[in-house]
Image 1 (cartoon, one colour):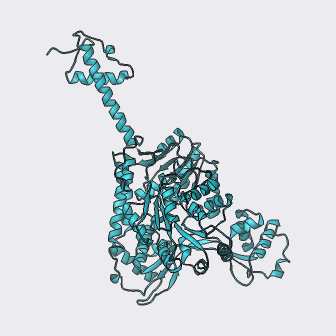
Image 2 (image 1 turned 90 degrees about the vertical axis):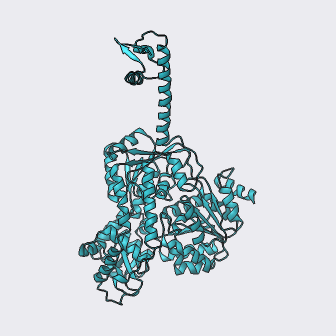
Image 3 (image 1 turned 135 degrees about the horizontal axis):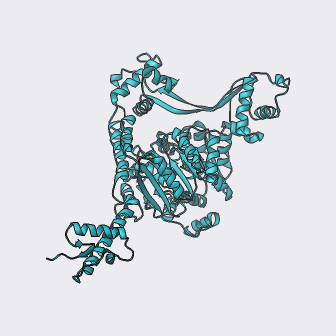
Amino acid sequence: MDDVYLSILKKYWGYDEFRGIQREIIESIGNGRDTLGLMPTGGGKSITFQVPALCHDGICIVITPLIALMKDQVRNLKKRGIKAAAIYSGLSREEIVTTLENCIFGNYKFLYISPERLSSDIFQTKVRHMSVNFITVDEAHCISQWGYDFRPSYTQIATVRKQLLPDIPILALTATATPEVVDDIQYQLAFKEKNAFRMSFERKNLAYIVRHTEDKLGELIHILNSTQGAAIVYTRSRRSTREIAEKLQKSGISTTFYHAGLDDAEKDIRQHLWQEDKVRVITATNAFGMGIDKPDVRIVIHLDLPDSIEAYFQEAGRAGRNGEQAYAVLLYQKSDRTRLMKRIPDTFPAKEDIRQIYEHICFYYQMAMGDGYNVTREFNMDEFCRNFKHFPIQTDSALRLLQRAGYIEYTDEQDNASRIHFLLRRDELYLIHELGQDLELLIQWILRSYGGVFSDYVFIDERRIATLSGLTIDQVYHGLLTLTKNRILHYIPRKKTPYITFSCKRIEKRQLIFPPNIYDKRKKKFTEKIEAMLHYAETDFCRSKLLLYYFGEKDSVECKQCDICRQQNSNKHAIINDKIIISHILEKLSDGRKHPPQDMLLPGITRERTAQILKEMIEEEIISITNGLLYLPTP
């Protein structure tokens, strides 16, 4: 089978050999064994499931939370003549059904899907009829509650596998996992046996640097002006992504910004501008980067400390994926410690505060004691916090902890697709004149694409209408607003609305229980991650070696290129040079004569350093000076 794997690799990707542990992972999953692969960012994870899937009959189901990754990999597979499909938010039910049926009957080799959609009735119905060769779980650390990016939807994977695909092997892949998380991934995915392959997380071409500065913006501009190539600048808040981008642009550095609050079309535009090198720098929150394939990023700069080493390693690792020299720079100031430590009480409010928020939510909905089971309500965070004098960050954390404890279901970003409903009858539309060509075209394509728009509200996708009509998304959006203003139709734009569902009847707040694995143990773990991140920023230990040790690589060596190693190397050279200077001075003066200071100079040693050494030797009475001449004192 080795020859078949290599022939597939050569045929579709043009490579003659596998890299690192790719072959071991491919052979393991190819032999039907549950497999976990740990590979650093840029290590070639996609090859480990794409090659064996092409070598075996059936379709590979790839579970990933990253829409950008889905689109990118499906596009690249299609370019290579490989049939692949993806299901993600924004697709209509009709498009989802068509995609799934193509996977049953159309000889597709890959189906990309988010973990949230595994539990949908339509997927569970259709997947029973698919010939699945194996399941791939990307970003597998998300399944572990001890991982840095735990997502409850990932816990459905083992259940779906057990119920629908019990004999199908599973391949889990991640670029960030501590030894504890490695074990937990295999447990959560119900591996038949422990079977993990680890590639060293060492990035020999990536220099880790921490700059201590009280002027982060000035340092950022200095660094970007001192380097070349594409750059990512990470910051914690959406607002600062925009503000930093504007300041960089004023400094003559081409920049755009990206965060989760932008609509999908705007995200795509900004991402493509950066990927195609039309702008050099993108300032972003951690919403940006996962699944983005740009191998020539030269530098990643963090203005704020992430909550964990895992998050930092993942984001920093987006630099230098092409193997060329790259830099991961963290800008750090004294106040960052206080700011990061505050994340602990923000993420884990006091239990009594959580109980108080629960009671206020019940007041907010006027929920009587014993009522509420399975009741779902839209949740207005701003209004709630204003009415009951809570802070949004702590409230959001309290709701998540109440959800973990089983009292509520809290969906902070329930995606409500756009809806329209025509207010005029179909025959009345033809009586309207002077709408303009764009609006007439817009109405025409809406009527062609959606049924029932005259009888009730219908979900629509502005991107789909734009693609079909040839209009821009902006023209579609403003056209719908104009038609609404003229009372031709009613348009409700897409919005992300939080919802709360009561999982059990309302109880007294004193009866709320938070087991250790919900609160105390997780708070302890979170605190340890914060402290580890601070230790990285403040250490005088090789940064690469510290990172590798965190991920279980105990025997790594100093990288020789981080700021600590360079400083230590510089200090060693300074000590050696000082010894050479002292030895030279003593040798010169050993002839018993008096010498002018210029006789003490050595090639390659600065006049300033030699003068400093002479001053120190005179103060320590090792040598003497009279009338500007140096000599050895009489014993």
